[in-house]
Length: 419
Image (cartoon, rainbow, N blue to C red; front, side):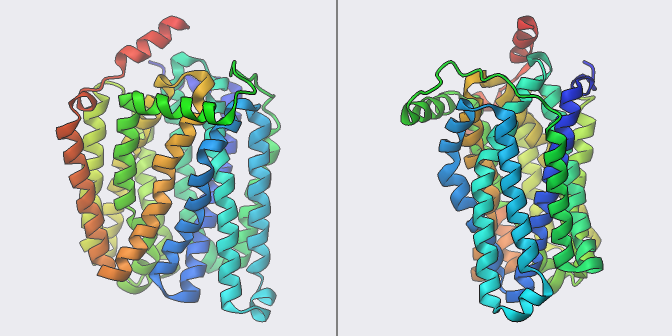
C-alpha cells in the first residue's frame, strides 16, 4: 500500500495544515493555562478544575453537536469553530496582561480563566466531529486508514511542538505574549481553511427531529461492538492514566526542572506518538487490530506506573515517550475502526460519541488525577491510575473475546472494492 496515498490530494494537505495550526494553538494554550493557574494557586486540584471546566460543556453538548454537524456544511462549520477559539484565545491574552493582573485579584483572574476554558469546551464539542466528518469528504474511502494515520500524525506533531515550545515561550516571553502567539496561530488556521471549498451534505435526513437523530447515532455505536469496545477501552485507560495533568507538580516540586523541563516532559508523549505514527504509514495496523490495541493500552499503563515512581528526570522523560508511542498505536487503530465502520451520514454523531468517550476522558482524567493527588499524594495517584489501566485491559481481554479477535482487513477490502 502507498504510504503517501492521502498526501497526493491537495485539499488533504491543506486540511493537515489547518489541523496542525489548530492543535498547536490548542495544546499550547492548555499548557500555558496550566502553568499560570498552578503558579497562582500552588494547588493540584486547580489543575483538575481546568479539565473539569472544559469537559462539562464538551460532554453535555457532544450529542447535540454531532446532530448539527451531520445536518450542516462542514467547511463553514469548521470556520465558525476556529473563530470561536480565536475569541477565547484573545480573551486569555487580555487577562494575562501585566497591567490587568496588577489591577485584578487572583480570584478574578482564576475564575475568568475557568470561564474561558468552559467556552472552549463548547467549541470543542463541535470541532472534533466537524474535523472527523470533513476528512471523509476530502479523500476516497479506500485510503481512509492512510488518511487517518496522517491526520493523527499531524495531530501528534502539533502536540509535540505546542507543549514543548510553550515551556520555552513561558520562559522567554512570559505567559502574556505566549497567548499572543496562540492567537496568531488560530488566525493562520482560519486563513488557510478558506482555500478548501464547501463540501456536499451527505445526510439524506436533513431536518430530522433532534432526538430521533441522536437515538440513531447512539444505537449505532452501542450495536457496533468494534466501535463500542475501542471507545470504552480507550476511555477508561485515558481516564485513569491521565498523569500528564499533574506534570506541573512533577516539574516544579518533585523533579524540580522548571518551565523548560516542564515543556520537555509535556512534549515527550507526543514525540513518541508522532514517531510511532510515521512508522505506521509503512506498517499498517489494521491486521489483528483488537490484539494490537489491547497490548498498546497495557504497555501504556506500565509506562504511567514507571513515570509515577521515577525521581530521575530522564527516566521520567523516557517513560512518557514510550507511553506516547503506544498511545499512538491506540489512536491510529481507534480512528481506523471509526472511519471504516461509520456510515457517511452518521459521522458527526459517531464522532460526538467518540469525543464523549475518549476526548472528554482526557479532561475527566485531569480532574481524577488532581482529585486523587489531593487525597493520596501525587506519586500514589499516578501509580493508582496506571494500575487501573492494566486492570481495564485484562478485563476487556477476558470478557470480550470478539474484540480480542478483531481484524479490519476485510472491512478495508470491501471499501477498496466499492471504489
